[in-house]
Length: 164
View (cartoon, helix red, strand yellow):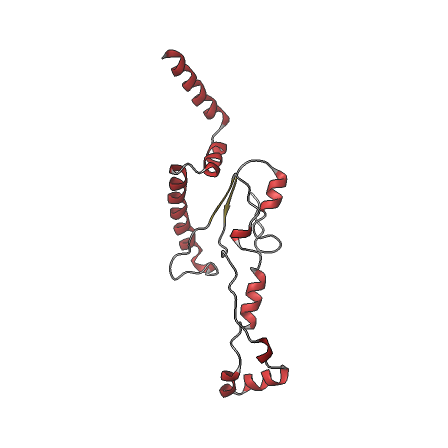
């Protein structure tokens, strides 16, 4: 298991491919695409105009619509967290549990609720993916079974084929 936590590579799938062959299950909480803003950059104020606008509340209305400094900082931290651009292979499965209504992934004090909701969602997703014959899910489930169990199933199949 590799976890990065948003410092270098939020989903270290490429290093995982270098370390091992076989299936990878990625649970991702990122967004599928970047939100774009229509900002009139030529209308952004200079430093002096910005200070005046911030000190005089009635001047704030004159500022063009643009993301805030906090918004820009947050977006720079999560810029490479899109699950739709991951270097997935044919046996890699990326699942994205939805956040429960009214909870954001940054609500750390409610992580138990996020975990429980994600767990229940993942159980349903696994059943659905297995039922539709998803090759990545089949590979992941097969890799999780002990070799003796797989061998026992093969021996049982072989013995029933011989007895028929």
